[in-house]
Image (cartoon, rainbow, N blue to C red; front, side, top):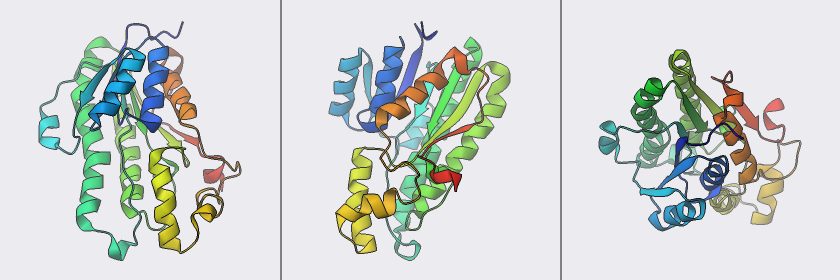
Length: 248
């Protein structure tokens, strides 16, 4: 019914949060999903649940990714981390690591997947960006920089892939109810000098018209649609799911 029966997908950071939600949604549409994560136990758990396979992978090992060849129809670049520091105090090694994980690794995975997608005349690259791929916030220099770079990578992929039946899009959620955001609450409280119970209302949702966190399943639903034949003319786009944050 979804037009995706028999297709294959690779979801990075698929052991939890947004990645797991995307994996479940795609599996529900008839896709055979590879759940990729450095958390082997988590990846195996999700893969077993959805009838997929697990791939324990360290995406920081970029040399191993350079020679990779992927036979996947759908690629979801989701893996990411966050750090909260002022620029003057941001550890350079942490900045470099975040660029590697959230920019270089997606580039290498797209590079590895496109030849198969081109040969089959079908491909979907779905990049989990963020409202921070379109807007900036203080104390998040590496994350904001990486997500802005991912937006550019996605658009170039769309332009090159279009003639071959390959689309590339970004999903730009606001704060999603994931372990990554839960950790941020404590970090933001420390950085801003306020109690944790004030962080969600006064910082995380301050710019949103809809005052709640995004649910991972909402992101997964959009990823499922972007992967479908119905979205064949949607490419080079950035789909906000931020409760109105970027409308300001």
